[in-house]
Image (tube, rainbow, N blue to C red; front, side, top):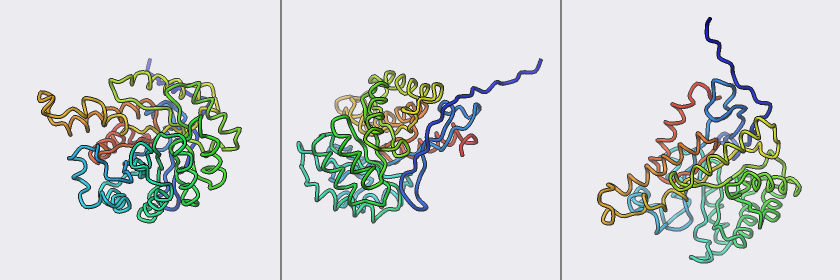
Length: 319
């Protein structure tokens, strides 16, 4: 008797969300099967990969990584343009590290001017990331959302402590997309999405940032949480969990010991820059097969490797 494959069908679907505007806008999500299961049905849009840049010269970045951007690190807009022209990411993640109150504490007004210059310099979608300081990010995101009205950026992220202000300014007033950020817990993710809905933010304007972890550093907990979210969204048709997922890989992988330890401290481990890239790539690949619809990386080699990975793994099954 001939083998007949039975496709797994689900009643739910991950919503499609569009970032950016014009010809360079990108769509994420749209799948109705588990990650990379093109043999079962529609895997939706190819996962999108963004490159991270910051608004100051990043003193804590690896010297070999900073050398790639020699001559443009002092000008964030030129840095963004260089990254787009030379490495072709799907989007740019502009992280306002300089606004951190525990660091340079740049003013909101300075950050707004930087955001406007970056938006004018590149035509790719922008993801706007903050400082992780709730009070500063609340002011920063609101002001940047107003300044970039019409650009359809993704604000990363609204948290339980500031979702009302960030959601109201970002999505309701200025029509951007919002990433709801929680800490690796399906119930917290569901709760924050519901709160955003109650605020008036539509599901079509929501993306989830459910947390991140470098491989070997509790990643299995993140992966299992993403599994539960996607299975609930698809199998239970849970509309409160049917938003695409974005995962900022870069901020987790470049700080762990395997990436940060110098060659003097760990000579047996080999090249420190290659270790860091490998940690970023390994984590990015694991995140994608766990269900992320977009990821953020730091090294151009990581970006190129992940593009090849997506093409080889998903190729013919993608839209």
